[in-house]
Structure formats: structure tokens, C-alpha cells
Length: 105
Image (cartoon, rainbow, N blue to C red; front, side, top):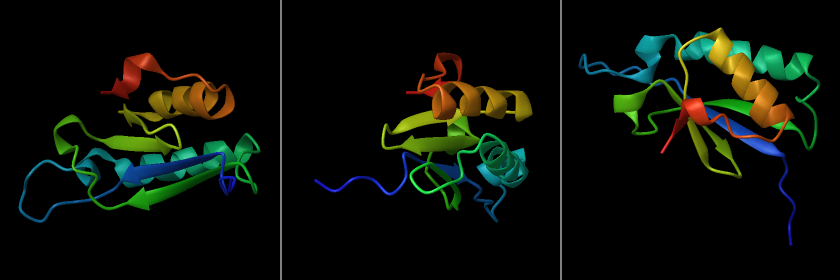
């Protein structure tokens, strides 16, 4: 069995549609992704075997966005501000607990 390169791989949709339809990129997704990267680094998570936070194109969940997904658990979250990112980093990425209030089914 091959072990995962990262304990958690986090993908933030940062897509911005050109046709005016709602998209995660319209909701400060890129800046909040950078904020999450900084939080992960500050928590010592951005190391081999730790956490990788990446931008993604459209994840096709625009209606509930902005969204991120954390693998390998495949847990989807909707977030709106730095407070939400703090909670996801602290509870899920550090503590291993799903943040139920932000989870998208």
C-alpha cells in the first residue's frame, strides 16, 4: 500500500466565470486560500507528510460557494471569512474533526 504524500490535500475553488454567473472567485476565494496557506504554515502543517493547499478550477459547486474540499476524507466546506478558515484549519487540519456547521453535503 502506498502512503499519501500529504496527510491532507486541500483544494480551494478560485474559478471566476466570464459570463456573470456566480462563482467562487467572486467571493474572495483567492485571498482566503492564501490566508489558509499562511495559517497552515504558521501551524507547522506545511511540511512533508502534512498539508498542501492548492487552487483549483471550477469544482462545480457554485451554488453553495465559495467551496473547498479536503482529501483524503473528501470533506467539502463552504466558508465566508477568515473566522471560518481558522475553524477549518484548527479543527479539521490540526484536530482531525469535521466542522459540521460549514460542511457541504
